Image (tube, rainbow, N blue to C red; front, side, top):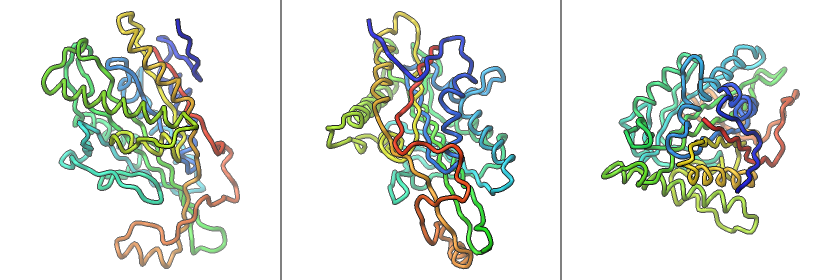
Length: 342
């Protein structure tokens, strides 16, 4: 027999609210204070990952709608700052990145700059309330690739990532010439489920999709192993677009929580054990989290924006507030894992 210890273990009777408060709420609070955060849902196909993240059923609202609702609730209550919120939604299908809000953009590239890893050319839609977020979520879900298999009638054939960017502004007291920004990014990642072809009975294109999914998840596991090993000298982030996109979440500037969806059926015990072992390894990873900040100078900003350049004139890392946020993450954060049985 094997024993596994996680931050929380939530059984079949646990509600979506229980999952949210255990795995997501602390990350959303940090994102609102200018940190990056990631929630990843991992598990075999049919274990309930998409249900946990994207459900909009009245009695089982998922993590993505709940996170968006909390963001806008905070924005409405905070009268001391101005906020701008953007939403993007992409899928990684057969090693191609497609914009689910603009599906004609189907071969997007991953780039990196001083701010970290990002998807070049992805559409960022400004959203002003939870209704607009749900509309975009529904639009993206319709464009996501799914198919029938013997294990899941609506099997996701791609990894999907919802990205919420929260920009928080406050004018510098007494000057009127500059404003401080904090930028928090929230990644909500629905990983396609691993599957055995003998069980899913996938053939042709479905089998090719399964092989691509399994290969990217294998690379993800290799990156987790390397990040958890203090003696490792190389982490193969570039071996898969999935791990490249999640590079900051796994080994850089983000607070990350892992939701392990487990099936309690005896026939899937091998896959369940593999999922739990993945979660246990992930908890050994440490990420370094830092504030994302910049300062705009009013005169230069107007000239720059007029020229169509959407970046700060001066970038200043870790700008301190006169009133620092009450919830400050530690410099090094473990990946927190919760096991959920559905």
